[in-house]
Length: 418
Image: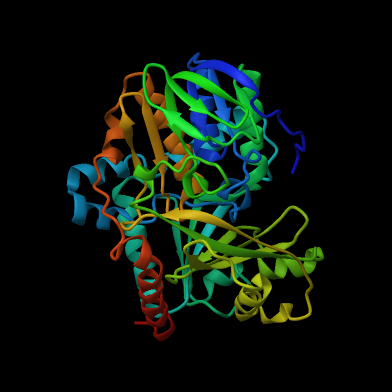
């Protein structure tokens, strides 16, 4: 990471126009938009900037949501689908605007690929291209069995869909760069300052072990890590309709240039089309960063390398002699309908969470929409807030085994190509 400075913990009482809980993509994006509007902003972070999913994710800029427009229209109507469709590619643009505006060094590269592992998935990619074209996104290129090999040096796939507008980056450096931009505008960030209590009122009071913030408005942006540490306030209203899930990644030793280019000749990132998908990209040092799998409930396997290395070798068997230098995991927050949860706890407390694996772009969109709703423009925020969210079947006790059983079923279908 580019910035190893630690910010001070909150000590004493401070006041703000807006207090943001969580210094990840959602919280920092919202705080930066609000500071640009002239608000006095204080951000409270339980650990370090980007400690959660924002700093540990696969670094892929993937457009849209974890459920696509046809599913949204079928379940929530044409008006909601149009509203969300008009915003489906905006998070990507926000990231690029931030990188350019604030000169953020985060290894930004263009292009991401969706790779089909069987004929059924390839047909679905063709339909995906046509669906996105209905919403004005025409930068998708369908690559057949021979064409995709100019992008991916693997025999595993039937074809791929290249999104020229997507891309990949160093996620922790992206969120740190935006945090520095926030501070340049007068925003204050306190690390090691978890929310221990939230007192509703005018003003609201957010307490930490070392102090408290009095704020006219509060933004809750803790996502899967909200209330997870000792003494943290859990906000039970936000726990009932979401579930933390863990995903794992490994990073190889640095590869020589010829070997790296044989794997990914154009240096784009890839995710496959399986229900439990694999995703990978090259880092600046030409390490192959490879991720995959989901542990429902947020628990980690005993050995991350033992889980992910076989997936890597299924895609690139020629890497059997390559050393794995790093292995890590992180939690994302999943909702039952796989759509993000935006809303209000009351008149001056807002939240955004539950991106279900599409948080890099959607969290940046959330930050902009929070900025809009706080300045009195609620229409776009309410397009998300109006989507109903049901609890997982079986409640908190049975959500994990039932989700795992469903994932096993869909993974079997992927293996059989049906």
